Image 1: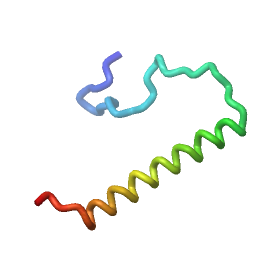
Image 2: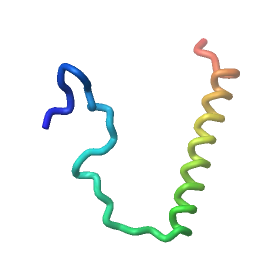
Image 3: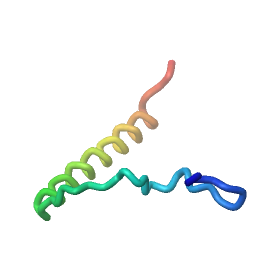
Length: 58
């Protein structure tokens, strides 16, 4: 079915029909993956903020 019509567009909805993960992860594995994601996320923000404050294009 089309994602967009004259009333709404669902192009940005993150529920594609082919996205089904049949792998069940343990709570420990989910926690490990979440911690890794958070570390990467905040490291990227930190480097972005540092660069915004100290990097120059000159």
